[in-house]
Image (cartoon, rainbow, N blue to C red; front, side, top):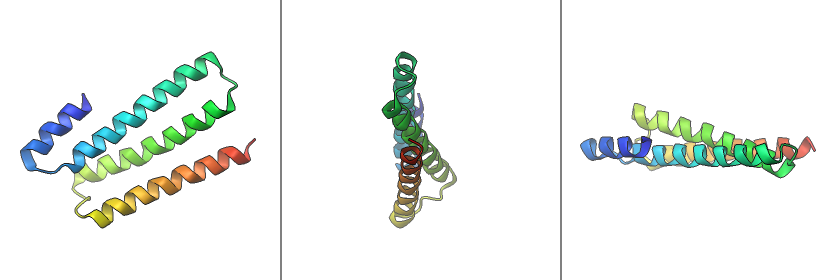
Length: 102
């Protein structure tokens, strides 16, 4: 799927940022699917709802990372670290909001 396609692109131009982006998107998508299946069994489970929110936020960050890789915006490690830190900050904020809602 997405990782194979990213590998092919990375092999052509030597840019591995797209491969990393695809890996992150795939990982977070998998986690969202797992949480969704678990919530089907126990829809009232607060820890599962929080975990789902966390992975949705991480997927948004991974998608932004992927878009940056596609557009060639990830040209240096400092830019990459800034994007990753922003995604983590967003995930932390979502977790705090979810915790405050209880």
